[in-house]
Length: 269
Image 1 (cartoon, rainbow, N blue to C red):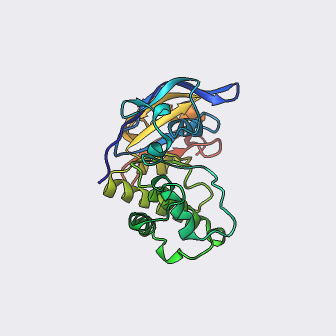
Image 2 (cartoon, helix red, strand yellow; image 1 turned 45 degrees about the horizontal axis):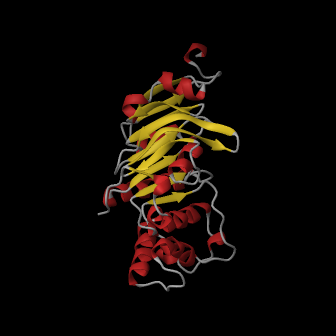
Image 3 (cartoon, rainbow, N blue to C red; image 1 turned 180 degrees about the horizontal axis):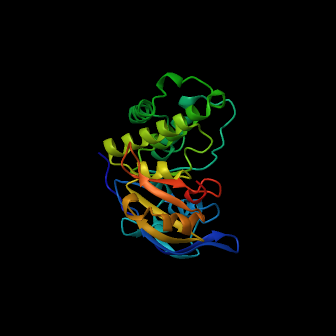
């Protein structure tokens, strides 16, 4: 079992160049849980994730990891604690699955040092978790979208981090692969107590798989809590401008939204 690290944002303003995207963000990520960040396009979801992962430096405020300002923690130590899967990772041309996954071991190796038994064990375990062991010698860019996403997550798992950030890990995948990836991440969370923070677009899958939801609008957090606590017609209207009904998911019992739209509202039936 991994150690339990606590990460939180304290009054964060952040963005790109002279443009602020996040404003006054304060939130603590529940440890050993699955959190999903929800919100409309451009609301700051990915920016918040990147700021947590130290890919963006806050203009004001602090990201605090275990009581320390994350900017003061050595990069190798950060890489052993936080794993990040970006939205559109670039695949090195012609690279094999096992070679890409092995890159997750860089934080543990000294300059020019070869991999040791611990490295090989971590790589093997990550590939087993993501069920890609039989793909070890395949070229990554020849795999299907769902298989490639498993490989990228395996790379992050090979880092053996306690906290894993994923930016839209199910985008461009068909529904079967989406559910498959989210099932695997749930197993990872339950078996290894990995704290997982994701940006997802599908509200119903978010409500089904998340222990905690963070709802954003215009660079601010407007609601946080369990799906049962915060998924309401008002919240969905506030962050997406969408009128909907909220019912109980017959499979997971989580809240499930039913969009109304203009042509299928009850008033027109």
